[in-house]
Length: 160
Image 1 (cartoon, rainbow, N blue to C red):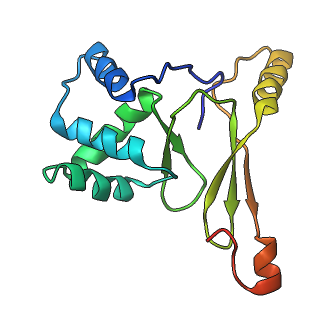
Image 2: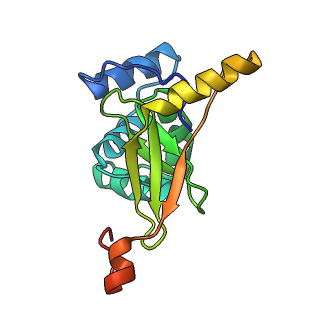
């Protein structure tokens, strides 16, 4: 769930930014953490913890499942990786390569692919509603589950 407002990060050198984050939190910069970060940041699409484990082990065979699961909260706290909970069995993650406006998720009900869509109005909407109630927004999300139009016509999902 993205925070409101989203954190702005200079992502000129993400690996160095992650190392600085670890140091600032008093955490050790280990080969396993760096392998997990490199694997996560190299993923072009949404990924699960198990996807991350597979990719990280290709970088460093000593990475364990427990290390990945312990690293994920650190990665998300750094704001370099974003957790995306789409209400399915697994949580998904996505690399924050650039500072973006609020992102909504559109989930294809036919193939389960997740699309990120700019939704800058959502930040304004959340703030406006909370202002009226004398509150400060902590998080919000917009998710749409949709069916593929081409699958309805051809029987094949165009997004799979």
